[in-house]
Image (cartoon, rainbow, N blue to C red; front, side, top):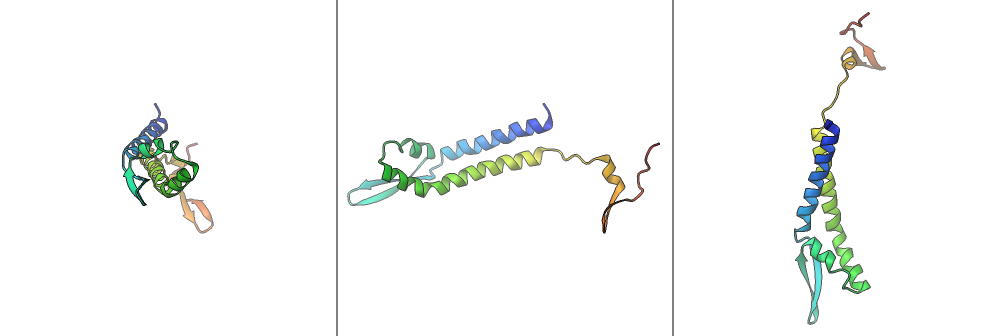
Amino acid sequence: MRTHARMAVLAVASAIAVLVVGLFLPIWIEWRVSGWCGVGYSVPLWEGLAGLPAKSEKERRDSLKENRTSCAVLLALAAGTGSVVFLAGVRRVHPDAAKDYLEGPNGSLRDGRVQPST
């Protein structure tokens, strides 16, 4: 398998690992009414999402409004982890011809370090 493909697979696997860990962290706040007041409980993400269909439309909208930020942070963290793993693992390829050029005031100039083969 080529390096880019291998690193892409590793990046996707690391992003999925971050998402799986995030599913079991108590980042979802579920509001339950007990008596006169509502109490917020931190539950795992999968448990909070599983309880959404049982709620009314207004309760669902209110609970989603508060929890969108935590879900967006989890997705951004997973995407960032995958990106860092991919970019850290991909080897940078520097062409041989680049050694013969020097940056001048008007752009790239040949500096004569490498003689062209004839």
